[in-house]
Image (cartoon, rainbow, N blue to C red; front, side, top):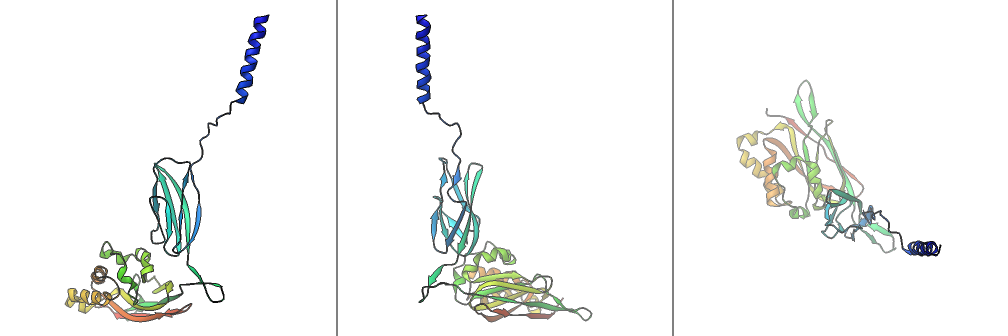
Amino acid sequence: MFKIKKICGVLLIWAMMLTLIPVQSNAAKKVKLNKSKLSLYVGKSYTLKLKSNKKKIKWSSSRKSIATVSSKGKVKAKKKGTCKITAKVGKKKYVCKVTVKKKLVKNNNDTPEETTKYGSVSGNITYFYNNFRGNVPDTNAKVILLSTSGSGINMPDFSGSSDWALPSKINEYNEYGVYATSVDGFGQYTFNNVKVGEYKIIILSNGTTSGSAFDNKALYAASLSNFAMTYINGNNAKMLGEYVGYRKYKTDSIRVRENQNYAYGYDFGITYI
């Protein structure tokens, strides 16, 4: 009887001791970014952190022209727009959506105002098809704006002349005052959010060809390259000249004003072929 009581007493003591031991959770802490959404003004920065992670992180930005990210997760806002910052650990990805806003300053009344002002440019581009159809849209013609401020000189080199055929890629360089778009099936084009200032407009026809180009293609390409070289660097200017090929082109000067649309249309007339 005494032994049974002794055993029961020992078990009771052990039971009481177990209640004092903290229970360890088997659930691992969830790995996540400290921000899933982030808003920054141009020029500002913020460091993202991946919580509960001890493994190596590979950081990347979906649009480096909008925001960059360092190997330590430091995000720096470059220009207005949105992009995604991704932290990759092994095969898992953790994404933060970043919105970059235009830098604000204060005027004499201490009222915030935007430092950058914008306007727009639009128009119709056509050519003469024949006496039966008359003038038709110059579909897929390219329209390019080059700022006369010289900011385009600092634009990185394109990887090849075919890049001038990809307005979406060129628009990554709007911060350098270089804009490009394609003419649609109605002969129309539009540039929105163009910084105010003086520009050279270049229109590369898609539906017509130039007799001058067939006479001397090298000289024809060099003529356009030399024109553009004042506003963009030599390599990009050369690629633009090569891209024009045998097509007609038109150059002119325009001025973009705040909150105003500059209407610029052009008809290339009859094609040589």
